Image (cartoon, rainbow, N blue to C red):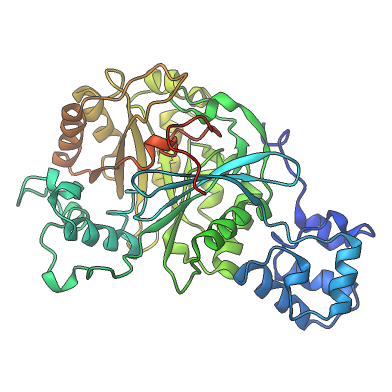
Length: 433
């Protein structure tokens, strides 16, 4: 499936330096590729640095905007058809909770969805990172109703790890001040047009898969949203999750390159990124060896093979035994955790017996679980579970020593929540002006 959807690699286009430069978009090229391009244009080496600054930091939309280039070079590039490659924001939907869902269009007419969450995605707490610590502090600073830690009985944390993840007594002087940047704004980006993984509870799966995104198109989503929101890392702390449309590990090379560009050129800290996979086992092993790698999240969603195969047909190829073996072999860094995501479906996978099976699957692992009550949508046969079932499920996990957090839904009213991305335009909330 991945080969069938493979997109042209900008690296090949740049290094060949084809006579027809109109096929080259600067967004997605790394410094070595830009240096090769500059050299073949007969320009001095410092031009590559100017391209990097303009494309990734200034986020210009056209060659003409790169004022550091000579007028003649800008004219030459424009005549040859070299483009920046910044995707276009086609539609913008704003939720009552402040979440923004972007429909982002590419040059070939395809589009994906990208989501901006001004207070994070609710999944940072307990991951051992700076973003996670800020998430916990922020949850406490806004009151008990917003803190997932409150589901844990006071003074009954079963181990030190759980205590760290479900902190309940932060010092008052550590709480963020009103109006202070909480460092919790999150961008959720897509890696494919549609998705090749046919999860039965996900709206994106109904689209099928059209093609992979290039590294430039993945990075371009981030650049377009940063420009629209008028924020700029590293000065502004941004969290990034590869949890939008598509399976990143079925577009592995472009995803890995995009992550590297986002760290090295856009300026988003590696520790503030998370990639979610449905369980492409060979790529989990590959990913553990990457020099630059976001934190890993694995979509579990079921407690046994029969149930997981029903909900996620890819379990036939990579079953729970294979998935758990890959997760246990994954090389965790200091204070790093694996996140397991578990979408709770009413009366299907949300019973106490399922929670107990999950605790056995994860026993002894340095991990946490994000519980996600199903975000409903047209064409999905499952229902959202009752809140008390979610609470019981969480309680069973925590009492067994597994840090578990209920992830709050963001942007449900505009089909921007987890599992709802389907390029939907018929929503109650009107597009923002």
